[in-house]
Amino acid sequence: MKELVILSGKGGTGKTSLTASFAALAGGCLLCDADVDAADLHLLMQPDVKQTTDFQGGGVAAIDPDRCTACGTCIDLCRWSAISEDFVVDEISCEGCGVCVDFCPEQAIDFPTKTCGQWFISDTRFGPMVHARLGIAEENSGKLVTLVRKEAKTLAEAKGIDLVITDGPPGVGCPVIASVGGATSVVIVAEPTVSGIHDMARAIELCQHFKVPVMVCINKYDLNLENSATIEKMARESDLPVVGRVPFDPAFTRAMVQGLTLVEFDAEGDAAAHLRQVWNTIMQVPAMTAA
Image (cartoon, rainbow, N blue to C red; front, side, top):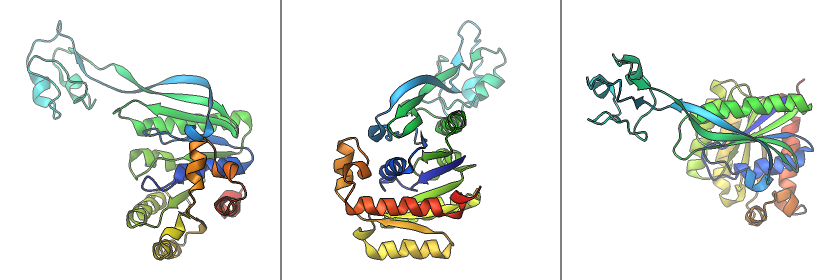
């Protein structure tokens, strides 16, 4: 079983739109939406949810007034100033580090695990999908990404599906690290802007650190040909394949409004032809063809 992870460095590059079209072109795959902080792949997949499970994340300290002797140890130790003078924990300020729990001399502080979101197993028109929704301002998105990827691989094995396509989160932080480890290959979708080039470089560095094969796809390449050339040069210098260049096309937006992938909405269009070429090139890269 192979897992292809689609990253972007920064948001707004069209990563999810390309991921959805790849799913349409794959001819049978399992989809995994690992962008749990701002999940939007479901808008194009229109999933039929079959299973919903609560995600238990970190804990929040809770002081039991019946056991508390008001010694003040917890207030002194809390670097987040989350405990008031009347020994009430502010759940928003509490980072869930657990220091107050460990050092309370009266063991008067509980640390219950809380529900931070939900994860789902769904059916889509392109195959099964594992996705999640993290609660507003909740932490532990990296932990949820790890869980979603694990469940996706387990489901793929159970159903005999040999390809998982994962829509990864933007950036290079904990959720991205959690989405990269153990992947067969990564496609970085880059846009020809200064910030797009900068964040692509950061994403490449991250993937190379974890020794995951990387490919580059330039989206909206014709908006700035000079910057697109810069992206290609950077890829060559890092010995990375550029698997394709997708032109800017307003049909992407029109397709999204209809809840469709571009290759469904405008199958004969120029951008759809480029996407098919990109997908075929990805599937011929050694990392994806190796046994």
